[in-house]
Length: 217
Image (cartoon, rainbow, N blue to C red; front, side):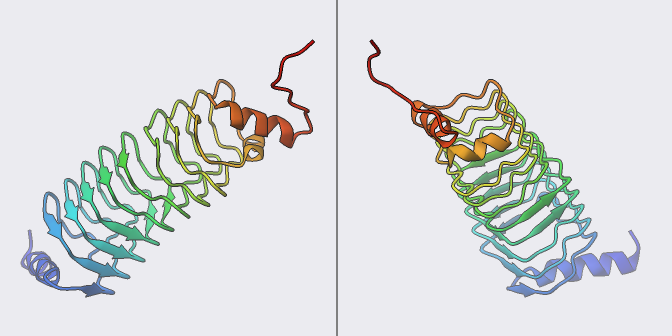
C-alpha cells in the first residue's frame, strides 16, 4: 500500500469517530469492522470494501453504495434510508430490525439474503432476484417490485399494501395472509402461488366474478 493510500485510509477511519456528512469513502476498506451508533449523511461508499462489516444502531441517509461489497455484513437496528445500491453485492448479508425506507437497489447481487423484522417500505427492487428468499412478515408498503423475481419466495403475512407488482414473478410464492390489493396480482405471474381464501375471493371479485361460498343446490 502506498503512503498516500495509507494516509487516506487512516484519515477515513478517524472521520468515523463522529457524525459524518458528505464525506467520500470511495474505494476505502472497512471489511470486518464493527460500527455502533454512527451516523452518515450524504456519504459516498462507492466501490468500498464493507465485507463482513457489523453495524448496530447506525444511520445512513442518502448514501451511495454503488458497487460496494457488503457481502456477509450484519446489521442490527440500523437504518439505511434513501440510499442507492447500484451493482452492489449483499450476498450472505443479514439485516435484523432495520429499515431500508426509500432505498433503491439496481442490478445488485442479493442472494442469499436474510431479512428479519425489516421495513422495506418505498424501496425500489425492480427486477431484483429474490428467488426462494424468506420475506415473511416484512413491510413492503408502496415498494417497487416491478419485474422482481420472487419465485418460491415466502411472503406470508407480508405487508404489500400499494406495492407495484407489474411483471413480478410470483410462481410458487407463498402469499397467504399477505396484505395486498388482490387486483395487483393480475399484472404479475402467479402460477402455483399460494394464497388464502380472502385473497382468492377478492381477486375473483375484482374481475367481476360472483363468488358464492355458501352451499349449492
